[in-house]
Length: 404
Image (cartoon, rainbow, N blue to C red):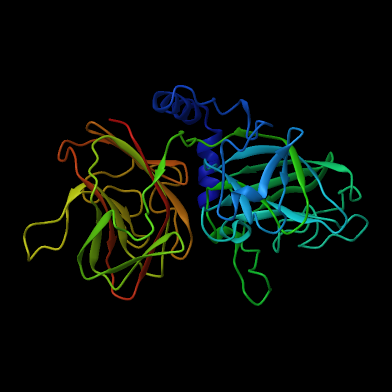
């Protein structure tokens, strides 16, 4: 069973979905329930959107999101992340136009490859390929060419649930229940980049590829088993001045990704937290071992390098303390798909940890793991761990929401 299939089981379980909705409402009472359509674009301004390029290259005209300085906007993206969803949007392109819809991409890197891209391209009348309009870029070829001629409006309806994607273009079902599997490459077939190794949750993004484009009627139904609450704050600052290091690991912010090498060692936030929710995309190299510590502090014993606090474990090879467990303190109840790790080395996954009082919970890719009451630590820093010499630890979009 794949990690995505496990997440899809959690999604389709009425009990789990209801629980997720209840918890979401407790976190943010104004957040819509997963069955409601929500406008991602209000037709008036760029509220709810941000950009790693020049945000002024994007604008609003006649209720439409437009590229006002084509070629300078890179990708514009939502300020919230989504795992499972149904997305609708209309797009207009000129002759020769090239753009795309980025899905599950991270805030750094190219969304077409950190997540995946449903292509927008002026290929009316051509035979479908893995880079033509309607295809999942460099991975899944659309069944037919459904895009209208340049100068006409088109409508996408895209559904992503677990490891399955469906795409309708102009009412035609052009990608029908396709798996996000081992297909996919980075720019050329000689550089494989499987879809199932990419981020499992991320932002919705639109691409500025240098052509005047127009978008409207952009809306979403969040079908995630654990929708992201509003107000989460990324804590990976540019120069890591909000952190301090202990021991030997080398840590750096490389293009927005927090990377640890040459463990063992730990990197701590200077800020302390009591009740919170924290989420992050995580990846470790082969035989990698890491941990996301919380309510923690450095160990004053010079002969003991391990911090004092809770550790949300990252380890795919430990039969007892595997990814999703709270190290040596709490484990998931045995159940379908949760008899061990559902993650893999060299594959991105998303970690969620929530601590309110003594109630500690963890999720991996939306699948509940730990749900326990622990009374050992009340407050402290966050820390990331470098463990094995030679391994590489990566954290992206490490975001926190205070709940105290």
